[in-house]
Image 1 (cartoon, rainbow, N blue to C red):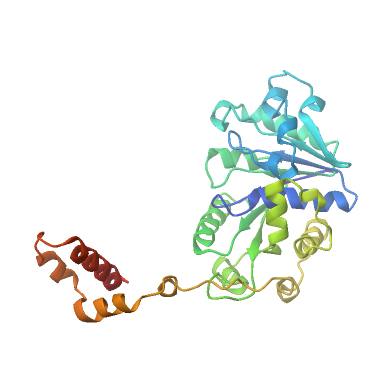
Image 2: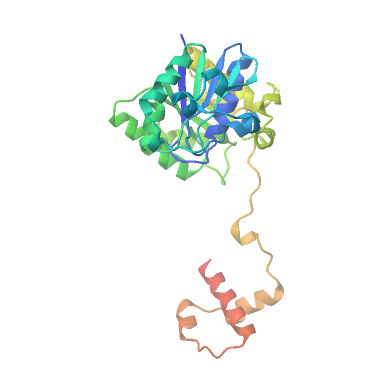
Length: 305
């Protein structure tokens, strides 16, 4: 029996499309037949991850409107992995959701897994895209904004008694001051189910931009981490967090704001000799030279910092 998994998120830009494509590839490598579906109508990007953007002639809406047969719209990415594009011309407001859901459920009978790359947020587009999902994975990145939006979507699901979701952490590092750590994120969200923890990978990011994800070997740490997610999908069991954290890379060194610009001796002298408070600046007359105005502007920026 096939399973439909929706990949969603509280906000955009957290790697939802990347997770959909790599998870589809990982499932296919384990012998499963997979259909990856871009359900972000009007804003499709999943085709770029697979490198098939120039091969699209028909999309899901063409199937709904009977402009083509499903086989004409479905593209083969690799043996056992197919792709169905979202419409670029139509948004969810102009699509009959029931017909779309019927098409996907009919197609799901021919695959082991159907993965839906859903619109972010919790609006009508999200509701229509996840309505037929057996499982929902909320992708979270190591930022406070992603944590907050995911928390709100989780509350929305709980309120409507939709408990078939799990959290999937993406693009995480070893504990660092620059990013939210795994432990902090899990403490804040307190999810009932954790589908996996995926590391940041420059190789994966580069392959995603080039549309060559299918060529990245299974030995890559990102795909190794996805192995744990497959265990969760197939058996429903979660591995110890410490095992998942072991594959995370060290965070890059990020300079603090005050270290970004070197301060010259002249600027230091200006700061020490003529630093201005906000009140002093407001009292200054307009009859100042360009050099003086620049010095005052710089001093005010330093004061605000």
